[in-house]
Length: 338
Image 1: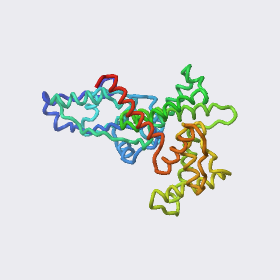
Image 2: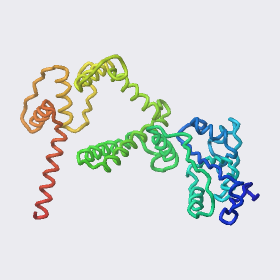
Image 3: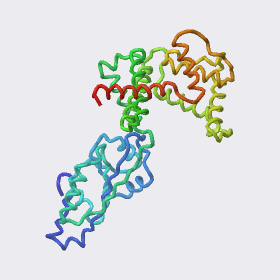
Image 4: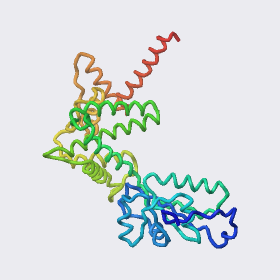
């Protein structure tokens, strides 16, 4: 018996007589997600823990330990080597190792080397996930990282909504460009940058002394809105076409907002073509026949073009950007002499 309390595995190549007496046993590596509340383990995990001859954990501060001990599980705070762990399994015993955040790479590498050596009879090895990340679980990591940056970064801790506004606009444009270029890697990165803006603003709002709100309030608000505006999914109404869905959305939105004009809520700070198309769309959807204002100058011509594009189902901003990219390519060809 060594200092850790575990016997090294016998060398079965030199001592075949011990083979029969010492069955190889079983090692269960129990992994958990830090994104799931401690103690919320799967039923197979609890079965393995209760049936084990030894339960080990190298991290005395592991968040699961208080809950395991409360459930009557004796956990030894120990970090045996691969050889010592095999010794602990001798005689058919089962040892459960509660993995730390890194997943015990040193231990698993040691077990792999022993298995490859051919010197010892290996126990049964099982990787048992005790808790799983749900879809969206990595968002919790983002919130935690943002909390720390807001508290410890000299630049981030001083930022305000107004100071960050320009970055939100830039990131939105870069996202649109990635979509139009069809670059999947760039799209994933730009979506992350836009998501950062949302989390950053929510974290700033959390510090407001008068009307604070958090990322949970932001998420809760949009969840409620989506459910309310999709009665054909979450309620009793039906919609079989995109047009019916849009009608549901507009009708529900109108009841929510109780606006005096269809132009309310249209941000005037958006790009001119998008603004013109949005106003045209609002009037057309409301069934209003509003003649376009007549006047001299390119502004009225662009207004008419934007309204015409919207009527034909064309995004004038996207159309102009596509034409501009073609023009850019033509300029580059002239520059290169090709």
